[in-house]
Length: 259
Image 1 (cartoon, rainbow, N blue to C red):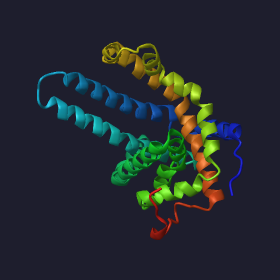
Image 2 (cartoon, rainbow, N blue to C red; image 1 turned 60 degrees about the horizontal axis):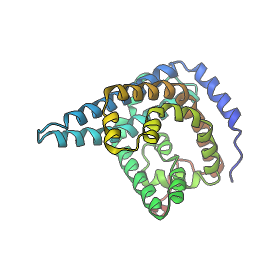
Image 3 (tube, rainbow, N blue to C red; image 1 turned 135 degrees about the vertical axis):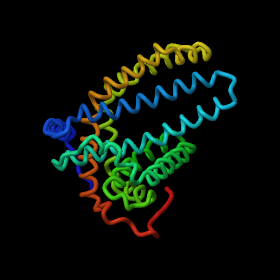
Image 4 (cartoon, rainbow, N blue to C red; image 1 turned 45 degrees about the vertical axis):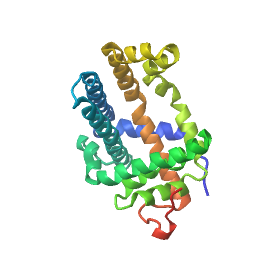
């Protein structure tokens, strides 16, 4: 059985929790976003170097791209662990950001499985893929709460936990749409205003454009992300309580399924 979540109350509680955090949420998220920006810069520099004739440029570019993609969910787990700690009133240090490395293998497998399942649903149509993304929304949080879970167990628990909450999660996301839009403004403007592929690639490769994209993403993400992550955890805690699907008590293997 699910219950209606008062989004405004949840967001107000999140602001109060963030104010009382012993380690500054802004500083913590600045560290996270700074690392993500550094990864983007590395990808850009490697891509720029890839225009050379060295036979190593292609593999190097591919390696940096894959490394960045796989590191992103591992660091994202650290962000969730930080927010979980401050919601419990605990002190969470900056190094919590890197706690996901202790079970990075499971995080990466979960990341790849989630991408695969959403992609397969999207092959049917866009809408089923969109719903699937919300169906698996709590999988990472399940793994944070109990790293002993297998990736499939985390996904299966999320399927049960999100029953009745997908629309409410969508409304939560929608309430932050303005900030998400501003954080992606350079990309949105470039995609909507420049139709010529050659001109698009030329502008996207320009260092000034890259700097504008990074600054927008950093500044506006720093404004909304702490509240967003902390509010999402309130939805997760409610879903765990009302669904009876606690990550501390994983499903038996016979209950595992791919979709």
